[in-house]
Length: 157
Image (cartoon, rainbow, N blue to C red):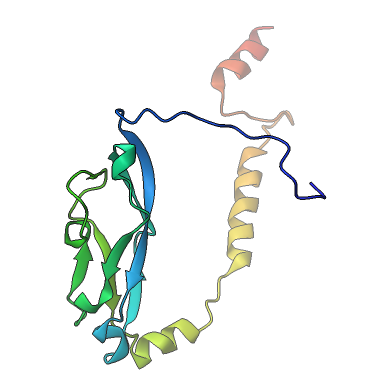
């Protein structure tokens, strides 16, 4: 580990006639007009796609052209990506890969800045009331239990 020299190597022979399942990364190219001009926020739902294909058909990446996102209503779906016919994508073709969300309004930003105050004491009081309820004793000073069969068994013996 200190010398950075490999001490072990696993070699697998790939059968070129059998399909394999792997992930191919997505490469996002170009700029979105909705991000540049409308100041939207780009949302990427996938970094890679799981595919099944023959080893000879593998590609290093899939390119996703973000210039297709011109408005906030535009989306890029898996079906919109140029994928060779020899590669089968395991995900639903209608799943959204990328979209642009509109920027937050002044009111939404103000809501995010307001501090949320929770009443922790109310939670502690409820828990204490439940503990007191569980520790009720009868007139003989014995603890009552919710399990009636155990108290009946105690009375018989």
